[in-house]
Length: 252
Image 1: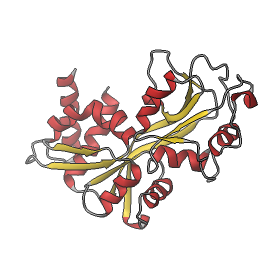
Image 2: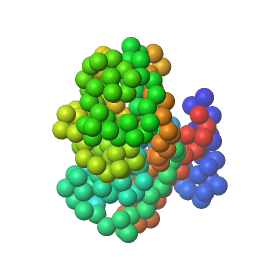
Image 3: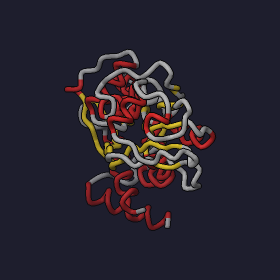
Image 4: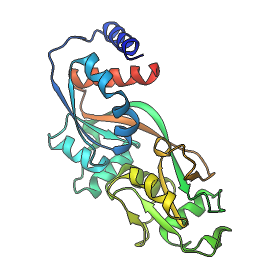
């Protein structure tokens, strides 16, 4: 299957006029953990073989990834939200970036979902209820038809794209409650909620494990892009990696 995927990638490069046997180079990526886990990591070996380039990855959240890009420490930033929200995450990380100089290259779509413990009887929430839970207006599960127990909210890192996306789409740009537990990585939500009956957290669907230890809450669909961002048009080596990831995703 890997050989077949490599053949598909090489053919794609030929059609795109991209050199498949280019001099080996390093492509520096920084940013969203979601993009790493859902897009890059599953295809890394195939992409490196097909392009001849090595990927150097720093999964340090969308905001910090954009700062690294703007300051020359990354060839591309990995982002998991539309550009305006990604730029807001960069500002939280300490830098206001001019979006006019940036280009977004979408690789695939993703969906943000909210998970709870299987023992929690609350399996459906509106976006308004989710917003009130994250801002602290709703603090107990009994307020939304559940058990009488305080709600524990788990969140992406402070500079994370998922956190910024939830703030804009779900919370109408209101502030997170001080009680919200901000984690080092959004992937940690999938580890912590299964051990906390009172817990809830928003994350990419791809992080949710199929072991039944967490349940996805029914709510309105929240779709987002998983993408690379470059300053201006991408360098040839970055364009090759983008093309390879798009092809590998379609070939799987």
